[in-house]
Amino acid sequence: MAAPILPANRKPHPWTEVAPLLVDVAMGRRAADLVIRNGRWVNVHSGEVIPATDLAIVAGRFAYCGPDASHAIGEGTKVVDAAGRYLVPGLCDAHMHVESGMVTVTEFCRAVIPHGTTSMFVDPHEIANVLGLDGVRLMHDEAAAQAINVFVQMPSCVPSAPGLENAGAQLGPTEIAEAMGWENIIGLGEVMNFPGVAANDPTMTGEIAATVAAGRTVGGHYASPDLGRAFHGYVAGGPEDDHEGTRAEDAIARVRQGMKAMLRLGSAWYDVAEQIKAVTEKGLDPRNFILCTDDSHSGTLVNEGHMDRVVRHAIAQGLKPVTAIQMATINTAQHFRLERELGSIAPGRLADLLIVSDLATLEIDEVFARGVRLAKAGRLEVEIPPYPYPANARDTVRLGKTLAAADFDIPAPDNSAEVRARVIGVIENQAPTRALEADLPVEDGIVAMDRRNDVCQIALVERHKGSGAVVNGFVSGFGYTEDCAMASTVAHDSHHMIVVGTNKDDMARAANRLGQVGGGVVMVSKGKELALVEMPIAGLMSDERAEIVAAKAEKLSAAMRDMGCSLNNAYMQHSLLALVVIPELRISDLGIIDVTRFQKVDLFV
Image 1 (tube, rainbow, N blue to C red):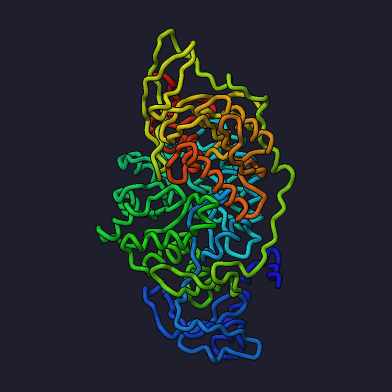
Image 2 (image 1 turned 90 degrees about the vertical axis):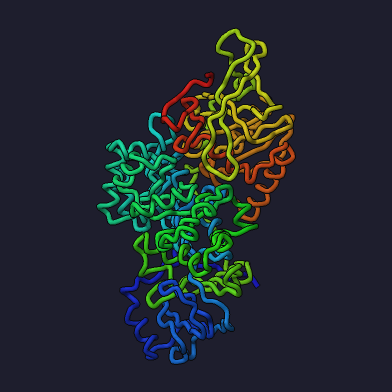
């Protein structure tokens, strides 16, 4: 039998409309739509696990949570026996980028619902850097049509670092103020321009002021280890959370200043283990800690999980299961001023819950959202229709010319036989890079790579205006041992094209291939295409099913391994090499950027 198709725009009834009905069901005057009996209630308000609990649900909300809901059972009531299993609130991802999953909002939801995610707070600053306010509106409208709660944070930094890069669009206080009136905007996305906040840059202060005036949450992004005066100035400027910490002292500093410390476990960012020591070893109040993913690869979503994976990881670091669940439910809801709507199993809240066999391993048996079972035993039970993206969201990769190997030549600055060059150093499982230096040979006036010491080339190809411009540099850490090149139009945050390779012919072939298919990521070796993930929507997202994209992404990962790369989720590392708001060294369309000083530097020392 085919799965039932969920209707589009299945929006929950506002509490104000259904409150009398909730009261009637709780009192036994009306029958519930659904009653779940004999569960162990994970109460994130009190921190308890309460046995022998019944839940009565009507109009998509909890009406009764207590020892006996038999009075709410009528002729039309569906009854589910939890059989002593745990009743857990639906999980919330407090900060994430849908585009990092390579799929649309709809496909992302299809992938994560079986893993227990029922609320997401998404920052679409990837599509904003390509399509501007129109792109944000597209994802906003798609998010509002989902079967689970998908709230949108308005991108704050487009481009992420003015003066250090050029994106495909620009947003400022006027656009932010306009978006704050949209129904599904929950706040301001991560404020990455932390030097701008500390310097009272009028764009940053204007955007933050517009958000606060609208009563929304200001997201933070302080990507510096400096916890001195610059950090204090940033906090005073208004950001209310931060997910860029990597050390326990980072989490401690943020919480002490009244921020929420968001601890992320994405596909390539492993920042929970160190920072959670602020709770497990230093004894800080866990109410001010929130779990999130930030960036999750499609393969991670399909094969490993989403927020369930993060919660399990946090428990493995020594947190009590209920505490870890609080960090992925009620803490998130409170932070975004949504405690009366979601984040807990309690009367009046949306009936988003999980039936879980084992709390420590978070073995999820069933997933309900707004009182409807959407998944069981790891599989969707409903069909969620795809969301149609218009033609103006496609064909955004404009190279301006057919690239050749010579476009990736790096002329030596003088007639010497050797030069000393700056090299971007990849750090496994972390977003920051290292500012390295290497002595490189010069051959016929062109600086050569040093493959023996793992120094290959990186290039940024301008792709928004079709200028044909290419910026070249060097990178270390991928470990490629074969002739190869990987190109991607996912290149946070301005999303030009990033090409990393050991062979310039392959670099040109990879870049041109992405121009042909409208964007995505491709691996080429010795003229042969080894793997391709097409992403025709803004050059950032596929229009295929998440399972198909995950299979293509796994083929890409396998190709990277075959070329000698042993990094965990190396594609995610590749995609951040142009992120000029995270230290230490990056590449942009303007050149090599020293992010510790926020200035362009020469490639050669």
